[in-house]
Length: 293
Image (cartoon, rainbow, N blue to C red; front, top):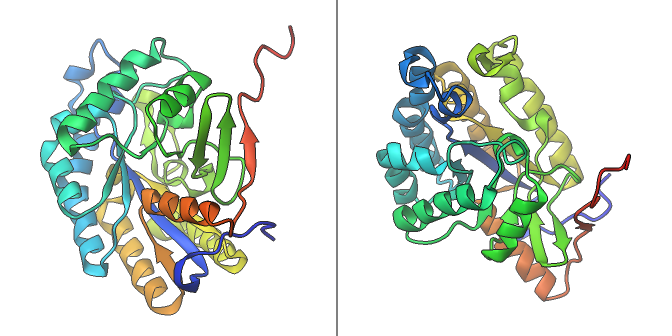
C-alpha cells in the first residue's frame, strides 16, 4: 500500500519513534500573556511534564535501551534545565519547537523568535538542533526558509505522506518526517479550556487504541510510525503504563527499528547518496499568493 517503501536497517519492517513535545507551561503563557502568571492550575498541569513525566519516560527508555526525539520550546529549556540535562545525558535528541510555543502563522517576526530559541539550543545542547517541529504544526514558508538557511536536516510539521519525504524549495532541501492528527495525543487526552481545547478525555486504553491501529498498518506496509506525545498528557501514570506495556510487547514480537529522527535522517541520507533509494519530493511553496486574487 506504500508505493515507495524505505529499506530500514537490518531488515526492520518499520521505523518507530515515540516523540515528545515538552511544552510545559509555555502553552498558558503564550495564550494568556497578561494574567498567565496568576493561573496556578494550568501552570501546574504543564509543570507535571518536565518535573514528573520526563523522569518516568526516561526510565522506560533506559529500561528498553531506546534513544528517542524530544521537541522543546526555548523558554521551557531555560526554565526546566534539569529535564533538558537528563534528556541529553541519556543520549536523546532535542529538536527546535519555537521559543514560547508561538504559532508561526499568527506570530510576526519569526526570525527573531526562531533565532532566540536557536541560541538557547546552542548554549544548552552544545550544538544546533538537527530538526524542527512547528508549534501546532503551523509551519510557514518563512520558517522553512530559516530551516534551510541554518542547515537543519529535517522538519516534522507536515502531512503529505505516510513515510519521510523531501521538501524542496528554491533555497534548499529538507527531509520531512510527517505527522498527522491520528498519531497525536492531543485529541484523546487534552482538556484545556484556557487555551480553547475542550476534548472529551478518553480512558488510557481507549485513547491509545487508535495509535496501535496506526502502528499495525504502518508495520504491515513496511512504513513509518511516529507518535507525537506530550509529557503532561501521555506521561500521566496510567497512560504511560500502557505505553510501556506496548513497547515491551512490540520489542519482543515485531521486527522494528526504534530511532531518533536525526538517526532516520542519517539513514535516508546514506540511502540517497548510494542511489539505493529515491524519495518522493514535495515542492514548496505550494502557492505564492492568495488563490482567490
